[in-house]
Length: 395
Length: 166
Image: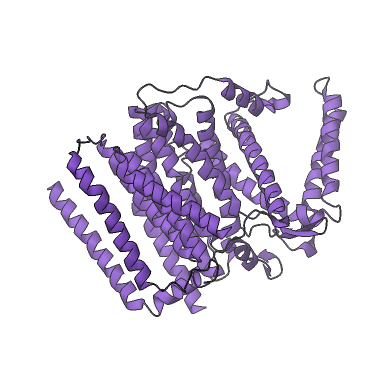
């Protein structure tokens, strides 16, 4: 019974954090894109537009949900539900940290610990295409249909190089369970270089990492592979006819998929919650140092206010950073928060890369996209797998 | 708990299978088939075949059915027309169906002794390691022959498509 209650609490916590994160990813993405393009981005709602996601949410919920007259009603309503359900499902097997003890109760950070977690992720992400395909088809509009068709073709094609890229590091760790994958990457070469899959000694998995990331861009329909929703050709692709909460579901599903893909890349290639250098050289103090630095910058700016309210806002920010820096050194919170910090830092860096690429690269043409998958990525992934297999066999 | 889960998934699988036949629209049928595949995967998982369950999801639900849906969408297949059946067909068909199901149930109960019941969670040989070991030791020859067969099928498909293009 205890297990059920704890699992329910964890599920509620993870769902809340994930959905809030998805809402704020939109804000982060808009801010980052704006700064890449030398403009301020959302600025009006709340300080630095921080309440923008909330206002967007209210706007989306309050809007009228339009059901096109010629659409297939049942599937039109089913599609966004499918998309968001499948996207939220895959986060269940992702572990965020080691086994920890909270109030004397030992539990694992993460929801489910199953033997085939990686295959589960692949299975669920391959089901994700139904939401988009059915949504595009049931709208009964040519733009939506074309978007849905493009998306299903693209996701089937890029699943192959993705699976091949995943298979190579699996040869090194010999398990499909995420916790054991992370445990296999523990330790350091020469006492400082982490034994992550990307740095693995006989053959570093840097190629599989890059291949996986590129395939993940295509699987999540992100720039430069966002052909399913190419606005210059297809209005908005598969979700052209969707409005209100149904549109928000597609949006949430897309961002959830990005978060999941980044978490999987972190666990498989970047050693999960293992620190970048040994704790003996003080890797446990990294979050504290970062927050202390942020606090110092904030206090420095409060001494030289550019606007009159800077005298009050900057000390508050600095105080929050100071408290955060302290929290990371509280003895009973440290074993929970420090691994979580490393995991979030790595996954966050990958999410940042997703947004960065969106601000940098133009979109592929459709034939280029397919040729790239089948004639470049797939052979390269097979070659990478063969070389890795050979080296593992020789070892 | 296991019994409840089994009943739920079995009912969903059978309901989806019936829906697959009854529906007139190809997309609705295809999505029902996906439902059958997913509930079958859950049943495999309950029996301890975790690798088979995931392979079922990836291969059948994730790849083959996506291709089905893709082709249906591409051809823009419309709703099927239903023809009215004569009364005698229904009158003869329903008893025949139940009779067939009864005979099937009788044969199955004869072949499988009633003393062996399935225990969920008893069999542990379904993880990826055991499946891989079995494929590359006991069943190596059938496994390799199947792969050659698939290769022949791929080459055949390309040859046929080539003829179409010329």
